[in-house]
Length: 436
Image: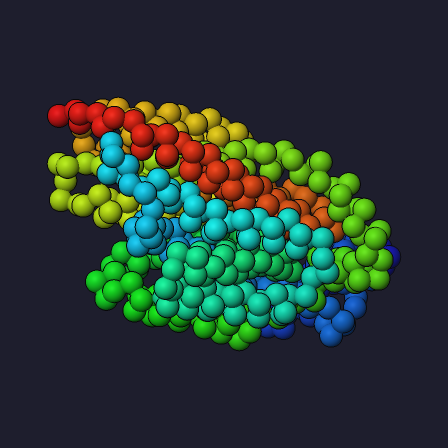
């Protein structure tokens, strides 16, 4: 009887202890939060806070910084493409006798705006990652590009300015995408949204500031490299010490310690990335063929916009589509990038036949198709890099991000070459009658 009473007392005591513990925990929270006993017993969880930093749930500074960096990095590139028609118009290119166009296509500006970027994106991933030096070079090249084009006295000097801007854009993209491996994966989506925003803001600001004059417009835009410097060196936080950051630091240290071995590993990794690169590059080849091979040839008389204004505002609408789709990855993901390649090919057929036969009755139909074209291109970009950020192993992520950015550049470069020949061939065709 006494034993049973003691047993009941002991059980009651344990139960009361169990009831009291949650009330005590509300007043004084435990130092660590553990999801399981195994997690508690791991040496990583027992380490003091000084030896590791827990990842922040809301890395707002990094997310906002990457949006601004994406905006600043692509801004100059977009401005040069939007100004392509004006740059070509100031040169002494031969005019077509059949149509209102010159034989120097805006594809020439596209090549100057992409080939340096292509070379940088091809080579930079194979070199050690010195992020501060790279960003400083980007800022200087961006400033030089605006100055050279603003004070240009010849088409050669203008093209040199475009080349400097292209170098900045290419080096910046490959650098910031590599550096994103040190931060929360969502910086990829804010970066993509920022590059889309660069399209809208760049094309729109150039079109609106044209009233101030070509030179003044470009000098005002020198504020953009300054914003990039402030964002990277001041606003962007230092990467936190965490498991994936340690992996990235080890990767960089290994590149410096054993460069030959690191280079071999990178070359072996390329074939596994082709599933991302091929459809991604194809989408960009098709859309830039449309932009630089057909936009300049679109000419509607039944609208309040002049032909040169039509080109600029089509660029704006394209960039609006890019912005919205590049900002969409946090709402929905598209796994099959090849679908967008097929849909973009349909757009190529529509735009090419339009500039040959002039069968569209209204400029606004072309405007809607241009918006759709931008949506496809932006979706291909953001979903490709988002897939890499979630599917590729941590130790391969830096290189994967960097080398995949080469795919869109090779697609754009090929588009620029093909666009020049296609543009000149269509320029030589007789002018058709516009459908009413």
